[in-house]
Each structure stands twice: as C-alpha cells, then as structure tokens.
Amino acid sequence: MNRILIDIGHPGHVHLFKHLAHYFINDGDKVLFTVRDKECELALLEHEAFDYVCFGKHYKTLRGKIWGLVKFDTLMLKTALQFRPDVFLSHGSIYAAHTAAVLGKPHMSMEDSGNMEQIRLYRPFTDTILTSDIFDKNLGPKQKRYNGYHELAYLHPNRFSPCADSLKNAGIDVNKPYALLRFISWNATHDRGQKGLDNNEKYALVKYLNEKMDVYISAEVELPTDLEKYQLRIQPPLLHDLLSCARIVISEGATIAAEAAVLGTPSAYVNSIKVSYCTDLERYGLLKDITGKDIVASTQKILHTPTEVLQQRRRKMLAEKIDVTAFLINYLQETYLTSKKDKQKSLSHAV
Image (cartoon, rainbow, N blue to C red):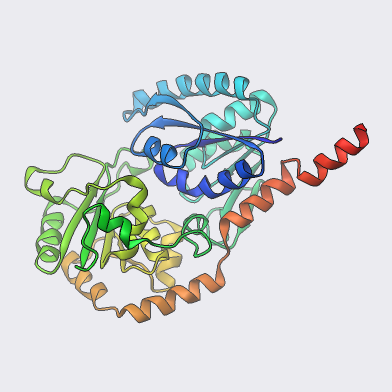
C-alpha cells in the first residue's frame, strides 16, 4: 500500500489532484491532504470526502507569511511523521518540499505560475517539477514537461461533464444568459505592483453586462455595498458547472479565466501578470487578454464570437493536448510508487 501526502495552497489545487487521489484511494492506497484555511479549500475537500489536516488560517501579510513558513513547516513535519508518506505531491508547496527533504522522501511538484520567489524556496528540496511544454521558464534538470494545462487534469472531457440541473437546484436560471466576474484580492506575493480592473472599470463592466444578462461576481475581497447584490452565492463544487454554462467569464485571476476557456466559454483575462497557459489559450482563440484595453468595447467584441466557432477551437485544442490526470498517475506510479505488479512480486519472493 502506497501512502501519498498532497499539500493544497489554493482551491484550484484540490481540483488539480482530486481525480488522481480518487484513483489511488480506489486502488487501495492511502492519500492525505494538508491545507491552510484560506478560501473554499475545506469545502472542496469535504465534498470529495478526502481525509485532510488543516493547519489553521492562511496569513496575508508579509510578516504573517514569514511566521507561517515556520509554523506550517513544523505542522507539516509533525503530520508527515504520523502519516509516513512514501511521496509528497503539491503545486509548489514550500512546506511539502522542506518536510520531504527532512524525511528523505521524494517531493513532486506541479508548476504553472512561474513565481520565482516561491520556486527558489522549494526547488532545492524537490525531485521533479512538472510543467506544461508551453511554460516559459527553464527550471533546470528537475523540470519535466508535458503537453497540456493544469485545467485539463479536471476539465478534460474524460474528467468533467457539466450538469445544468445542479445549477437550477442552486437557484441559477440557466435558460437566461449570465456573466461571471472574478475579482481577486491582490494579496499574493507575486501580485505586488500588478494591476487588474480599477473601480471605474468594474462599475462600467457591471452596468454594461447587467443591461444584457444576469451578473454574478465571485470576489476574494468584500464588495462595495452597491455591488453586493451581484455576489455569487453557490457551493464551491458547482463553480465549473457555472463556468460551463456562462455567456461570458471575465476574471482577474488566471485560473478561472483559463478554466472557462478550456470549457469553451467566452473568456477574458484582466491582469498585468502574463502567464503562459493564458497566452497559449489566446493562441487558440479561446481566451482574450484585455488588460489595459477598453473593458466594455473588448467585452462587446468577445460576446460577438459565435458559439460554434468557440467549440471548433476547443476541439482543436483538446485534440492537441493530453488528459493531464492520466499523465500524472502514470508518472507517479512509474517514478515514485510501488505498483501492484511490484507488490505481487515482493509477496512471491517473501513466500
């Protein structure tokens, strides 16, 4: 029986690893998640019925992050000593990397953000860093590239089928067009000095879209009083159904912009941080970077793209990319875990 510890730093990481985790659990292996209480990670882990350990609240300030490095490293080590993992898996987790090195266990990291501040802290203690082949940084001999995006680990057609009925049960009228807007908090270390939508652009965008369709806002920060009525109020596991059925998605966060694009939903990214997977999705015509442009005019242009054109572009993208979960499972099994065949061989030798 293999034992896998997966550290989570963002809600998207739960989605990234959930199908892999279910595969190994169903195969008789043990999987434990570790997490900080930041956004909706706990709700997502509970929805999937995963075993997890929460290390407490996420720290937002620089001083808090420095203290968190000590606190979470300590809690990670304590948890790992109890769980005894064979391998650590994460999306760039400093805590998982440090603990794996202390215990002499391998740490396999996914990477797509390119935040070198974070990479420098975990790379020396990491065995493998898996990146897309369009990732725009060379991370050295530990880097292994694959042909896909993180979003294709959970939104590939092999892994996800939208369910409009779930949205109806949550009070979303899927027969009416709606827009989803995503505003981020700008608290991450790589967000310093960057920009997305200013308040005037947010109000202009809401005013324009509200004249044509329902508007929902997903925000990491408290919304102004006059925008609170647009606040999205659904359970976190329904987010991808919501993205799939939306008329348009406009996001300051790269993950949600890319998720919508992978699903074939008209998508716009508004952030001065350039990320390789959004650039590649723009190459397919599935996403538009509208940072620094006229927000309303850009939105009008995106809305004019015919649905059949977007679906044709999506089919082309899917034909050229892989099921990332299948790749991860194979790589983890072949590189770091004892397969069933190996287990049977060990038992036969023991007899």
